[in-house]
Image (cartoon, rainbow over all chains, first blue to last red; front, top):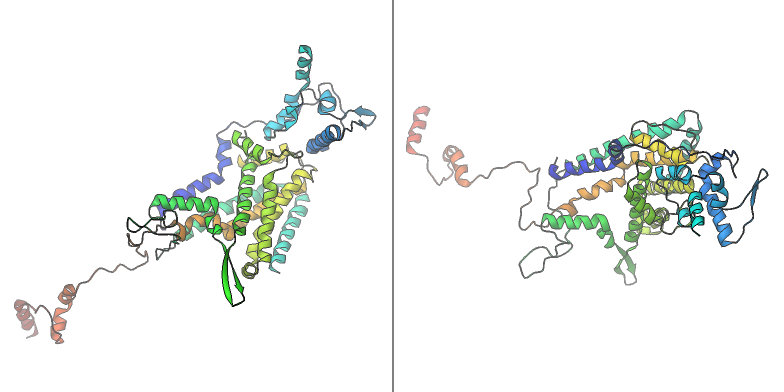
Length: 133
Length: 346
C-alpha cells in the first residue's frame, strides 16, 4: 500500500464521520421519548382522530391560518356537535393549555421549530398580557 | 433501454419494500436488519476499495498541468494549476472537491460546415453538479436531527436556512427541490446530449433514478402521504439504531420503509459503483501529485532494483573470460594471478 501516511488517517476520519451519530449518542445523555400531555380538563374529543392529528396537525393549522388570515373565512368547524373556531389559541389551546408539555415536548425532541409562536401566545402568557392592559 | 432498465429496477425495489413491510414482523427486517447490513457493506466496501486503490502503484508523474509550471524566477508560476508544493496541491484539491473546477472546464465539441470543429465552453454540467451535490449534502446533514439526541444547535441553523422561505407546514425546503431538480437535469443531460448518451450505461442511469426516488419518497412522506408518519416514532427508531437498541414503537407507514429500503440499497450499492468518486476524488493522481517532475525524479515503485554497474566493475567481474576469449581488456590480468591460474591448469 502506497501513501499510507495520508490514506490511513483519511480513512479513519471518513469512518468517524459516517459513524458520528454512534459516538455522539454514546457520549450524550439521551432524553426519553416524549409522551404528550392529555388535556388537563379531561376532554376526550378533538377535531380529528388522535392518529390523524399526530401526523397532520401542522397541515390543518396551516390551512386554518390561510383560511382565516388570507381568505377572511372564519367559518367554524363542527365535529360531533361541538363547534370549534379556527385558530390555535381559539380551538387547540382551549383544551391543550400547556404549551411546554403538549407542543414543545415532541417539537424539541424532533428539532421542529414551528413559527406559530412568532405571533401566537400561550394561554398563560395571554392571561398575563391582559392584566397589564 | 438502458435507462428503462434502471426505472424497472427501482420500481421493483419500491414494490419489494412496500409489500414486504406490510407482512407482520417484517418491519424489523426493513427497519432494523437492512440498515445495519447496508451500513456495514458501505463502510467495509468503502475501506476495501480505497485500500485496493492505494495498493496500485503510480508509475509516472501524471498530474494534469493546466498552467505554467514552476520555472525561472521571471516566468510567472501558476500555483493553482501547476502546484509545486504540498500546500499548493492541497489548495488545488480543496477547490476541486468544493467547487468542481474540472467540470467548470467542460467543453462541447461541434462539427460545422467546412468541415470545421469548434470547442465551446459548456458550464451546464458544472452547474447541475453543484445543485445536485450541495442539495444532497445539506439533506444528509439535516437528517442528523433524526439520529442525534439531543439535537445539536447547528442542525437547527441548517434547517432554518434551508426552510428560509417559510412556505407551508411542515416547512418546504430549498434543497428538496434542488435534489429533485439536480437528478432530473443530470438525467436529461445523459438523454439529450448525444455524445454523453452514447457512452451512458445502466450504472450511470441507475444511481440517478435511485436517488431521485429516494428524494421523491422523502418528500411524499413529509408533505403528502402522512398516514402513520409520526416523527417521534421514527426518531425513536433512528436513535435506537445508532444506540444499538432499536425499537419500533408503533406502526409506521409503508412510505417510510420504502424510503429507508432505497437508502439501504444506495448504501450497499455505493462502494461497488461509480458513486465511489466520493473517495476517488481524493485518490486521483492527476490531481493529488505535485507538478515538480523537473525538480524531483519520480521513481516508478514497481521498477526492479538494478544497481549501477560501471564498465570497470564489469571488466573486473569477467576479465578472465574476456582474456580467454581474446577480447581486449583495459587492465590486464595481474601476473601473480596469471601464474596461479597456470599452475592450477598444469
